[in-house]
Image (cartoon, rainbow, N blue to C red):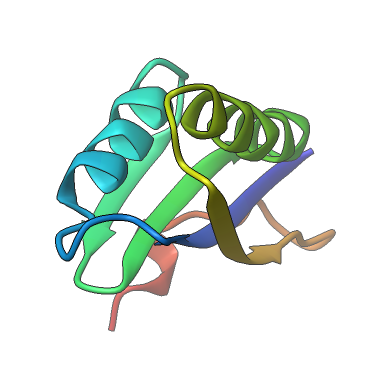
Length: 92
């Protein structure tokens, strides 16, 4: 099932800058066959729902293995039955 999602990942207990952790999140997302759009507060993702949910787990596992103590993810997911959801279809 195709889906669009918005992911906001928040590392807690890191240094003042969270750029290294967020850069790592983007690297992990780019390893998959997703359409991505990053923005100031998160990343829009288009792809298969199962893959999107799976990569969230991979991000948490990887960042914890690399030293992140605490991570909070906010994930909004959209699926549809009347048409295939796309990021392009969301643009105004």
